[in-house]
Each structure stands twice: as C-alpha cells, then as structure tokens.
Amino acid sequence: MIKSEIYPGIFNSAVEGLKKIISKDKHPNIEIDCTILNENISTLESIVELSKELGGVFIDFDPVQIYGVGNNSNYKFNIDLSSIDKVVSLANKYNIEITSKERIELIKKYFKKEKIIVPCYSYCKDLLISPKGEVYTCWTINTIIGNILNDSFAKDWEKALVKNKDVLTGHKKECYTCGFSHSRMPDQNYKKYVQEANKIRLDYILSKEKSHF
Image 1 (tube, rainbow, N blue to C red):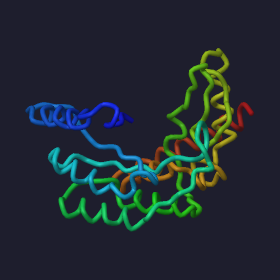
Image 2 (spheres, rainbow, N blue to C red):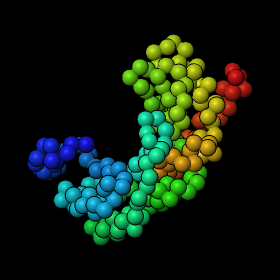
Image 3 (spheres, rainbow, N blue to C red):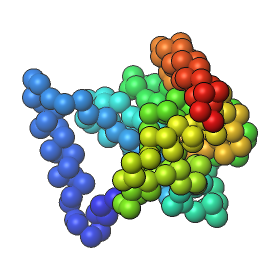
C-alpha cells in the first residue's frame, strides 16, 4: 500500500489516471478490490464514493486474512458490522455492483468467528508458491506439500489433493475459519457450474486414491 503522507498526491494522481483510461472507447476492465480490516472499517463508504466517481466500477470486498501462511492469528477483530451494512446500502443507492450478498454474509460470519462450511473451488487449481519453490495447498493449510522445482512435484500434489479432499465439501478443520471463505462461495449464476466442477474433481481425486495411494 502506498501511503499518501510519504508520496503526497499519489492517490489523486492514480484516480485521475484511471479516469483517463475509463474515458477511452476501449479500455481494460477495471474494478476496486478492498480488504476490510480494523484500520479502514470506518472509511469503507469512501470506497463506494470512489467507485461512483469512476463511473460505478465493480467493488470486491475481502476480509483481512489472519490465519495460515505468513499471517498473524493474534490479530484481534474490532469490526463494526453495521459499517458493512451501510456500505451495502450506499452501493445499492448508487446502483453500484459489489461483492454478492452471499459473500457479504460469509464475510460477516468470518468476522464473528462463526463456523463456516463452504466448498472450496480454488483448491484444485491454485497453488501458493514461496520464492524457494516450496508449495502450499492454500493460505490456510500451513503445510508444505512439495517443491515445484522437483521432478516429483506432480505426484506430491496429487497426494496432497487426496489427503485434503474434504476441502471440496467444506468439511476440513482449517476451512471453518478461512478468511478467504467468501471467495469459495460462487455467485448464484455460477453456483451450479462450480458444484458440477467440484463433483468431477472429487471423482478424479477418489480415483487417484484407489489406484495409487
């Protein structure tokens, strides 16, 4: 994050640059990604105002992730959930598209530290790779499954998929408090496709379990 007190005017310059890009007949898709944390919960409405200023670009809200690789589980939430409701109301008022209602509810559950059971659809397609090539299944499962620089990595990954197959149904302990749980919940338009994809993935993993492990 670039701090304006260190580089005065840099934020306004960035906004003006975005406006120029958006003014073109053809321009890349632009959206705002905002991480919700103690330090900005009281100013989230300004993000909606910024979106309005930019012509109503999509806003994706994420909760701060405190568990797993490289994170601090001692971080204490001090989140006023009514602030999130105000942001949703303001976005609706301006007719600005934001994170879906289903995901917003999951974000609230996460901040309240309630148990979350949601199938993960990034489990079979995303990897977290360290500078040394060490690979983790995801942020939350803080276990090295192999090294991408090793020839054996493909088999190591398949073993990890089998070992952690409960992720696909949301019934793995580490997933119950996952800060990215909201991203595992697809919008209603895609939910059917994600469920079908996860079934295929699970069938594949179970076949590997029977034939190799």
